[in-house]
Length: 384
Image 1 (tube, helix red, strand yellow):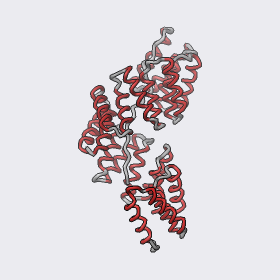
Image 2 (cartoon, rainbow, N blue to C red; image 1 turned 90 degrees about the horizontal axis):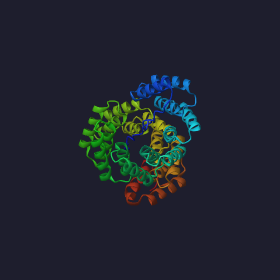
Image 3 (tube, rainbow, N blue to C red; image 1 turned 135 degrees about the vertical axis):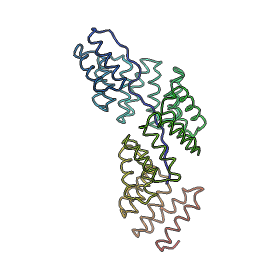
Image 4 (cartoon, one colour; image 1 turned 180 degrees about the vertical axis):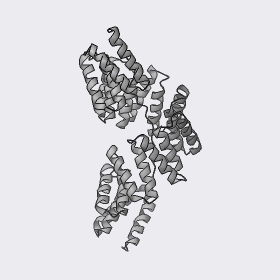
């Protein structure tokens, strides 16, 4: 089973220190204290201060933006969106309100609306480096790699020492298979922000792809030394462990999931590891969760279908192989697997069509696929 690589993207919610507009001294004091508390991670105290500030002036856009930041940090995304909406209604030219609303929209998967908000923030403030970085992250989610890199480049033109943009551009270069460029960006990000776990996690990911497991392991330990609860570092430690200790890998993927229950790749990789341990029920459960969390590649449906097949769920397996083919019509593994189910159901002509199509698609892998098809037929005592 293949394993997946993950980049820790560095999205932040409180982007630029917001301008502290002049208000009554009492209102300003509550706003300022709320901003300071939020910076220290005292989210509930910050929200309480922003609430008081708004009692002095219920049409204070800056206070709504600040409270929206705190609510989003707490995970109350819809409430944060409501505050950003109010701030924009009051002051339609406040760039950080659009930027932060875009981040909140990105968090709930509304990518197009998020990009629209980042566009507005950039139009209002053409040198808003964080908005370029955030729009690039949204474009990455849509697999628009070229335009994402253009946005990261623009962010770095504005702020050459923007470690988050460097780290995120490394992820984009990784997706382009530009491993040298990705490593170079990671190295720069680490030099600028040596106390950021994300930079080490990202470099570890590239090193895993290069086969440099020793270097990757060193980076993972550096990341965990900075932040013991870095989910992505535990995930990468699991990937490294897969090579010789599946049980340790499963434990690391589980720890990553405990820290971040929405880390889709950890569910996928734990499912793969459980499959290799012949825990087909556990594997199917992990694939289920991965599919619930976000749109998944054909391989996840194919793998879940295989687990379901081994559990005797032929209908579920067929449904998954169909979905894999719908996502990627050239996924020859899914055709072979669906052909196996069809043979088991005595639907031999349909199975033969799937096997033949898989062989057409296999290219250089044709000899391997042909041998697998012959093995299936031998097991089921059918003519080859």
